[in-house]
Image (tube, rainbow, N blue to C red; front, side, top):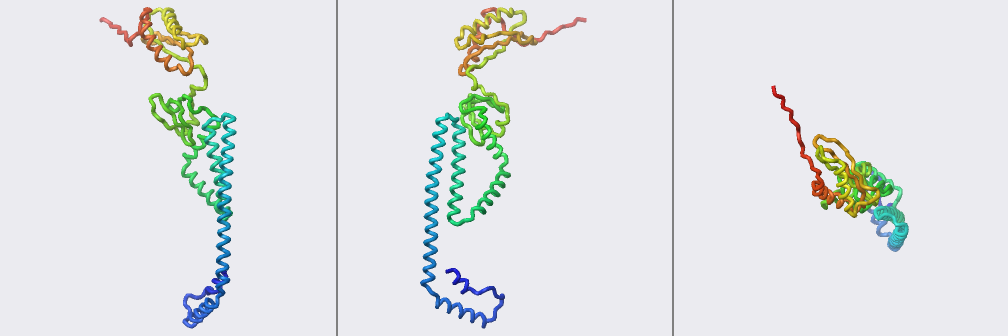
Length: 305
């Protein structure tokens, strides 16, 4: 069908054509249009339209079947993760990644069905990805950090951690950042590329945790009496574990006080209550045993001439 138009349209000619030649070409074109076989023309258009329609229907069918297959694969992954008790953060990451990859493959298959050169599309997509990756290098590092965290699992959702000067409970592990909630209910976002290479204190990995206090007593007070009083106070708290047993040591002979280190073990969930409540109990009950808390002091020596 399209060959007819190639025959009707004149070939490359000079920019300035004599009038006689133009009239002859016009007459020839009119004659071909008048004598054209319209039946063949419309038959060709109909055949092309039917072929395009068939390709569109085939592409739609492939897309619908492909979407069903992708959903089925994701469902099978969910079932497998549920059986193996995979961490929820890793589960969501793998699920989304698989869904995106298979959806892109499906789109490429549909585009190829429509007759588009897939190789050119892939080359264009690769070049665009490279350019975007160079422009968003920090974002790519955060993504890599998120993958490392999900794979290595230094912490999980619900863990209490301390990193980059921030402490709180991990609320969510995203691909680009980790969300923690502090004790005063502040929400903090830490970039994954930073926290993945930082020193992380995870306080939720063990069931037990040691509580440390530093108690300063006045010079001249009986250290043994102070030790006995402190151990009695801890023994009266049922949250303090008997084993490992609490201990009290002289930690430092400071400028204004003798500093005692008190160490006891408790369950992780009771840590903060044990720490703060026994702080108050030490302050109230130690004076009852003749133990005094010193004030900062300076000794002045006056020389009389």
